[in-house]
Length: 130
Image (cartoon, rainbow, N blue to C red):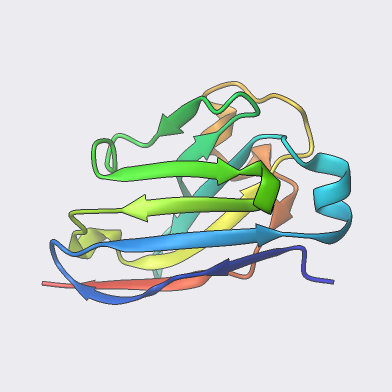
């Protein structure tokens, strides 16, 4: 049963915008709703890297490469996580994954590393052309 489902990816030109969404459901939602969640991305031949994270209080944390351009948010009533991406660059290209933590709190460092999370979506592709 897929419990985190991403949507909103696509192809845009540099400078454009995309809004990613991640809908949570099932056991993950009932057991871990409100826990920290994050967005990660992986380009071909590269390791998965943290992009943004949000904790149960709505505090946010961003990778330096996306600060000022990306905004993470969550709608607990709708079980949904979002990532608004503006001023996109070709280097933002990759598969974007939604992730859910299985601990109620993560340090700022662990919020942006894959090992901090126990649930993952299947990803949505983002391609930015120059």
